[in-house]
Image 1: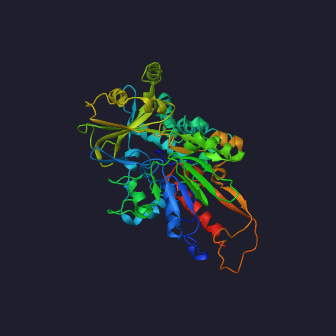
Image 2: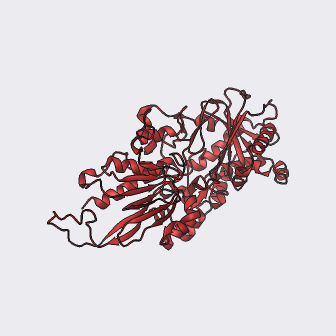
Image 3: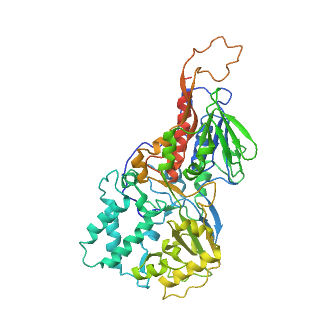
Amino acid sequence: MCLLPLLRKRKRKKSSLPHDGHASVFCIQDGGPKIIIIGAGAAGLACAMKLLDNGFTHVHILEAENRIGGRILTVPFGNNVIDLGAQFCHGEEDNIVYEMLSSLDLLETSAAVYNKYDCIRSNGEVLSQDVTDVLKSAIASVFDNPIDAGPHEPFSEYLRDRFFQIIDKKDMVNKRVAEEFFENFKKVESSETTFGVEEASAKGVCEYWVCPGDYMLNFRNRGYITFLRVLIESSEDNFLGKIENRIKFNCTVEQIEWDQPNGKATVRCNNELSFEADHVIVTASLGVLKERADTLFVPPLPLQKKRTIVALGYTSTCKIFLEFPQRFWPEDWTGFTTLWRKQDVEKLRRSKWAWLEEIFGFYCVNYQPRVLLGWIVGPYVLKIESLTHEVVQTGCMKLLRRFLNSWLIPEPITICVTNWHSNPNFRGSYSFRSMLTEELGVSAEHLAEPLAVVIDNRKEQNDSDSDSTEKKSATTFIKPVVQFAGEATSSHYFSTVHGAVESGFREADRIFQYYSHE
């Protein structure tokens, strides 16, 4: 989660709405090629819909979970629903998610929640509004006035240098407090990385494009699943919409044999099912590719693809939702961020509750009047996912009662803790550009490159048609047999749903272009 748009370039480009296509420039015979899409997240669903909308009928999705959505997961909780994964539509202009929903009156801002939070020190001291405004303004200035970063500059150094250049000119801010605030903000931005902003490349972060407009749009009382339902044309009578009967759930792909003499691929699954396809679109998370790429592809991936999967960063972020019997905070209060004093955090690190340091704040949740949401980043995410809910709740209450020590806080009645890293079908939350990508000279573009084979005859379909008197001349051409989509393959919109959706459209376009001149 990013509470402020990072120092990211604002670029405009022509958007690609889902029904735009190239069906008019080629003829699909008998439904066209057989296409298997691995994963029913935003990228996989977007790819499937664009293919179906443009006349391809042999399109099927294999999904390891028992649901659609991937890292979009809306579940009932408290008075309404909560999003365990993707939560916000980030921006308006050039954002395909916003463009698809803007006329449907489904979105509203969450900016107040994440802009008006209190800054509270670990002794319960609430920073004055004047000091809080100066600190927040300093961070905003870093992002509003970005300086191009060098290829080997860690994002942490970039942030620190520019933040304290501004703060050093502000006499009203105690330097210890500024340091505490900065350490907290590093955790906020560490939700962009796995184990801290030290691993993130400043140059890579700068290559992210911000979609202008409201950066914290929520889905009111419906959750992010609303977008998926619009995407697949879901209805009250048919939840799966146009992908009904085209998806197999609880179907984990174990192997993709892709360099075969016939120019096709064979996909083998855990349930002993196998499928032959002309094209396979892999939308598995980068976390899954990191864990399974060596055994998933036969023959093995090319060296550059392997290096790219290793080098790209992948974050684990955890959310903790606490539902209370009644609201114990003022109606206009939106949440707080944790500023640990040096002596307090040193003592905490020596205790069994050291993981509490990684909770960078608790915030209110729209349409959930009795719920607070805690965000956790860093290496302790893995530990938190392994703890019982009782232990996590006890720790959270220790933290809340320490920082909000003047309030009477009741015990929660329900807790929900996410487990994106522990789930073998995800192994984390979303990607980022690490320092290793700069060292190895690899990028999302390399991950997006398809695995291709050389075919000696352009006519793959209906070659045996005895009624055909005209045969195409032999041609050598490159066929994309295995393609890659997902937010990690997006050069400029990584870590976002709109980046995932656009990547799905991109791979559908790749298939259109391949057949467009037949």
